[in-house]
Length: 380
Length: 206
Image (tube, rainbow over the protein chains, first blue to last red):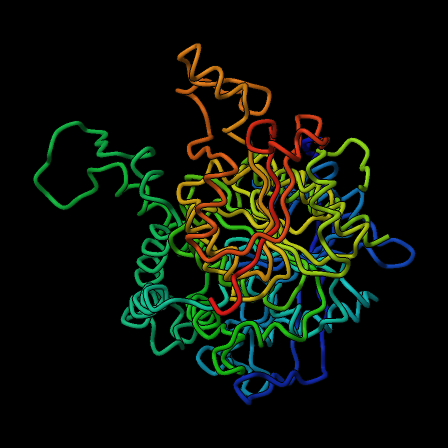
């Protein structure tokens, strides 16, 4: 049976896997002796290999950025942005989505088998940082024959990777695009992550991260972590508009079962997430977020941290995003213009909160699309 | 004077004032025309600040560095002495605190360049004095109840403020709507000038 896809979708896609036997030294001091990366590509790499765009994913994302798998009705997570004729135009760009190490969607992670003992890594899987991801993505670029990315981009944690790329591989990236990102998490932000981790780690089914051996998983903990996270990705106004105080049954039941619409929504979000995500991956991803701080090595001076960069930058934030607030993006912008770099910044009016970077917001698409035009002109 | 095709004529005077290869901050840069010109023709390194959504993609398409910012929130994200010139063209009259912004301009820049519609122009005076109505003109096209211009001033007012803020005026132009100057304009700038252009810096020792 053949599927019909919208004309502006890349349509049917399939992931690729690459294996490395070359050990990857990690920020933690440890080493990943061998690993797999999974990636998808859309569009065609031009003859001079100057039109490649790396899209980095956020906490719960994957390499499945656009298009559909056979039989699926849900496309990749940035389908709104990527496709023929879209904001990131696959007629012009060769788009690469890469699954990060530590993930549970194909790249080697805590649920993968540890060759040392033939059992899942679990807590023995090393903590991976944004810098380690960039290192592994650079190896993927080598394997794909891409010497220099036309752009490295992403939202949230994905945007952090774009910034790290600009610092670590100045000569291999023409444009860095960081959307709804930050140069480091605030105490409040780390606090949210810590509650999420505690929810998982205190679940009796967590078994210190070795739940695979017990043929179970800390679903309750993961569910709670996601429910909490989800609230912080939405804005107050959006939640009010979407749910208000709506109660499907109309009357108070005077018990603790689901009554308000927002409760059932959160439970649904938590349940569906807990069914498809790995608890150890969630721990690892939140830790990578907490650790990210390029200025840590320059005595807290973010401008100094960016000094090696050569890329041009586009920084975008959303007005109602309180998890990665516009002020965090403006800190990045300041560090960049302190260095006289080419940087543009737009603060997009949107009520969707942090999740706005996934949405079809006209001003957002217009600004990003116009910038991508500039990327295309520079890259050919 | 440099002639720039299709560009707002006050930009030509501003461009003449700006030395090649300098660092320029353009406050309220609109669609980025001035910065684009300065970058191409004078090799300046510049940033434009603008609040209006519609101008952001227009700047990006020109390759102008645009930073979406509310000027009323100040320039605190820019370090002292980081620019050779800070330009404020036809925007002074629409900010909340013109005096604070002028001081901020000379904190982050060595020289400031300001242009504004002159409220002392004879037609403005005539409308207020003889018609008893708030003036509406080519340079001030808005009705009193619906206008972005909340701090209109005359050349004289501006110069009094500069003295109070310890600002040295280096150059002044008063021009008509076509941005041409003439002998009468030079003799009676506050009466005949429709647009005022100033280049200034901090008074030595202040």
